[in-house]
Length: 156
Image (cartoon, rainbow, N blue to C red; front, top):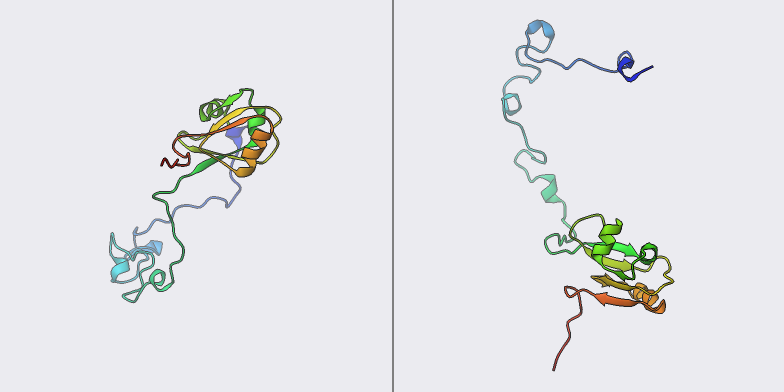
């Protein structure tokens, strides 16, 4: 058996219904659209949700929640266990991209605490969970926040 010799089972495929091809076909004349009216006309139809002049369903139901899509910041989550696998002592987002841990192009990085780290590394990222920061520093490492996310200092 080869790919070119495979065929569909009997009854698995159907011919496309051809409308408007004469009265003998059963779908001639009005082409199965009924008589007159908006739905019988070419190029028209009723949009989804249209309620025939009454308030559409999507407007009668309450809208809940808030979506901050315009200003939200999406972080790529990197676990401490993934940092342990890298051989570099200075770990930056560029090093993570080269290693294949970060897959998307321009993104913010947050280090999370899943797993263990046993060696001293300097990690530069946009955000750290408190537990991840504690684990890195307990192993003798150093945590550096990037300038974009660093906490503002108040000078008096």
